[in-house]
Length: 317
Image (cartoon, rainbow, N blue to C red; front, side, top):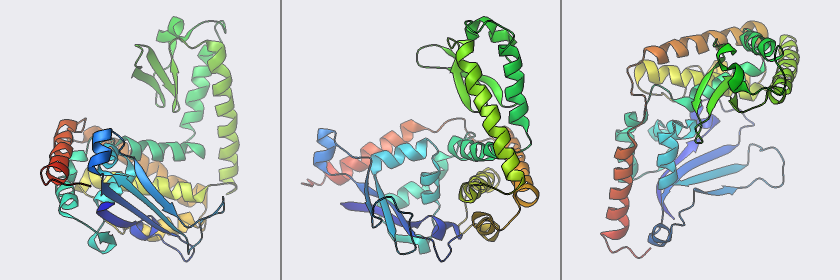
């Protein structure tokens, strides 16, 4: 396997490692000529010392090495793992190459106004624990409309009556040409029956209220997930304000406290995440970054690299 880059990843990269943190590596490899010609390039090659379904321990090692094809896709999609790798400092890089240096030199081409995975992930984690209660109220408003009509009705028949408020909005057209409506992250096609949608939203409202109550009591909180949400939001903020991500993260001490569950969620964590999400959303709205990645550029980069490294040199690999 021809390594393009190998990076020490996870908590060690972010600066949030504890004595119990395992060791993660991420990387990119150049596929063989045979894999390219036969169309069998894998997404990644993985290795782990962990056995069974046991939780990772400090001595465990996890390694994921992505093919160049798949890494370019991840980065074009704005996936957090790719963005983190692109900003890894030299002291976290175990092996590198001219190909990796070329990718990093153009990493800003992956920045867009959406950076969807960062923002979506942070919102999803925030919503689990009742931040602001806005999502609960939004779901209730939609339910009020739905329960006023025949359960056999389709959403398309009441399309104009559906609330367009924060957390509830049109979600574009699906590949089949159907309009879509989103409620607190849940997407429904216009052909969906009201009687199908109502139980889903009622369950969301019930679960949301229960989790919010538990959060107020600091119970059953996935602290690791919350720390990841904070990290994702902070990294999005830095991209929007400084066009980069700096590792280790400046907020690493605070993130480590969150990760270890040493803070009160309601008074010390929720307000920070709440305000941060508001700030990030405003930054995204005002950003002059492009709406979409120039995928044509990265397709050319991929083709040129493969031709140079695997075909022009008479490579037999």
